[in-house]
Image (cartoon, rainbow, N blue to C red; front, top):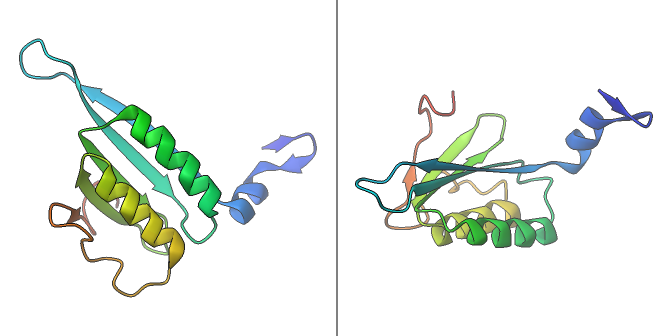
Length: 120
């Protein structure tokens, strides 16, 4: 795909991306729907400014659950309650995307779902 003679795919491969998707599920009874946010990113290409902007966008959505999917050679995925643990995970990924301990949960309630059908 080309836009104004610039290759969008090339730009994404050099600049990276962060994609935020919000999914609302019906709540039991007639309450407010539960919200899950899925954040897909290329941590080695993102700047801290981009991460801060994404953090504000995620916080504004106020999800009950946040899923972070990091696009490494092999995708890695973490599920966190709320959004604060996920924001800490994203900050860790951007600070040191090559960290060997990145696949372990950063928070007590966070779950690593590496190899899950969600990310295969």
